Image 1 (cartoon, rainbow, N blue to C red):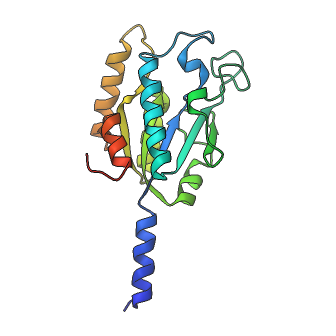
Image 2 (cartoon, rainbow, N blue to C red):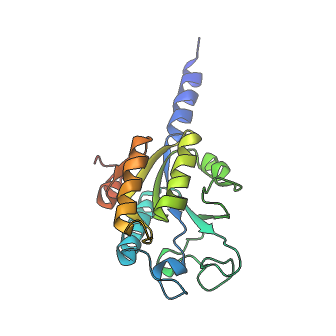
Image 3 (spheres, helix red, strand yellow):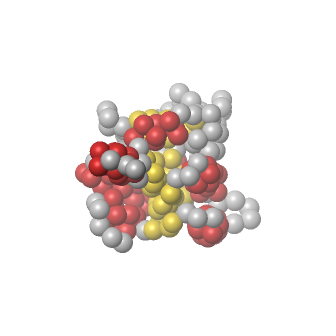
Length: 199
């Protein structure tokens, strides 16, 4: 039989493990143009929406983790190259963690899971790039580790390819991820949710 102290400890532990964190994925200089590749689809909108979520998270005391891709020589996000730093508008605050990765899934070969556990996180809000690669792989990686995942459906982007426009790819990824258990919401809705309001 649990004592009152034990019950309170369990309650507190449960509460802590259901904290939310904001994850910004690969929002680096090259994504927004001027570094050898064209800007991502609706890059300005992506930057505005990611910035809005970042501001809401900071104002609400929600932990923030920035994911930074470290690509190989000659690639747009080549580590140490001009396109590699996190975009100026989204620069991490001193208290915010930066996780550097080399695979599409931000949990692969990194300490991201440990960082989130340190914060007691159970739910992750995701914004970033590239819809069909790092965003989708990180969403799936998080689901596989037991996190609840909320994706800003208007807060991720990509580039067109020969088969599909960027808009088609984004829509297809939203649909696929929702089927797999990711909860889709608009940036506006997620901003309210980060403030503790229903949406």
